[in-house]
Length: 240
Image (cartoon, rainbow, N blue to C red):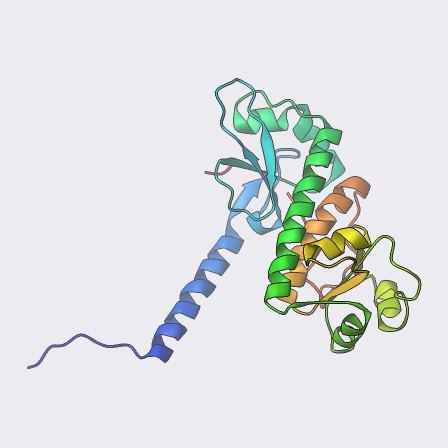
């Protein structure tokens, strides 16, 4: 009787890899974490992660981790004004087991800065992957093909807000973020008034990241429809 090593074909290996990734994704979605504000459990996918930077002093600063991969002891927070207020009044200190002195407005500034860095990174990556198009004409064509998300500069002219873009504004699928010069600087251009994200894989994290600040600031839910981009809910709990 002959014995040998089974040689998987390339197709078999790809299929096995997809199964492993799917199982990993499903298992991550089931992980529960506790909000350090209201102390209620939620899926980790619905939480905002906050990381403690371990220092030599008793004061341990915290930072917002939108991507979810920053090293350090982490905690999780619902994106609600009440949860944030309770976290700042002692929830962070209790979760990290060390004095955390942070005011609500200070945390909001930290959240906004982290939001901008994350969105800039996602947009650059999307542009390189040809999943983000810039300019009125390109955005018009992408929207007509079903693009899920458009980003409009604060100071964009009225000429941009017409046609397909105007309809997207009515449908609540447009985010107003930064001025034309700042958007242009992302792609080494002088100015950009409008850009459109053509794939959900980039639109969802962009929308989720942007709305993190808006939801806490106004304590309201996103206007996006689930069929366009998966809805975002938020929460805080400590990493095990």
